[in-house]
Length: 182
Image (cartoon, rainbow, N blue to C red; front, side, top):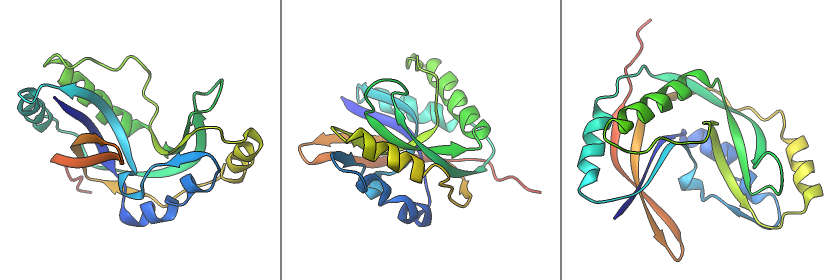
C-alpha cells in the first residue's frame, strides 16, 4: 500500500517568511518547513498497482497557471477545541477550480471524492494543549498576515511515508499547468 496526496508547493521565499509561525505557540507540533504545502486532495492508502492509473489520470488535467498569496490565519475545527493552526489562501477561485478538476478526474477511476467542503489552507501546526489565551493573541496579532503573490505553475503527486520520526514526503510526479500568455 502507498499513501498518496496531491499538493501545490509554495515558493522558498514564502516558506522562509512563514516558517516560524507554527513554532511561535506553546504545546504545538509545527509542520516541518520542508513540508509546508497546500494540499489539494488526500488520496490515502492505495494499492501500488493503482499509482500508475492515478498518475495517468492526473496527466489529463489541463488548467491555466495562476498566482496566489497566503492571507490570514485561523484554526480547525471552526467550533470546539482547536486542533489545526492554518494560514489562508487568496484568491480562492483558481485553486478551488484546480482541486475540483482533480476530484472529478480521480472519481472517474473510482478514487472517492472528499465529503468535506474544500477550504484552501496551509497547515502551520497541530495544536495539543495550547493555552486558549495565547492562541487568541496569536490569531489577533497575525490576522492581517499577507504574503506577496507567488506563481502556481504545477501541482504534485506525493507519496507520504509515515515513520516514528514523522512523515517523509516524496514527489512521485509533477504536473505542469498551462502558461497564460498575455
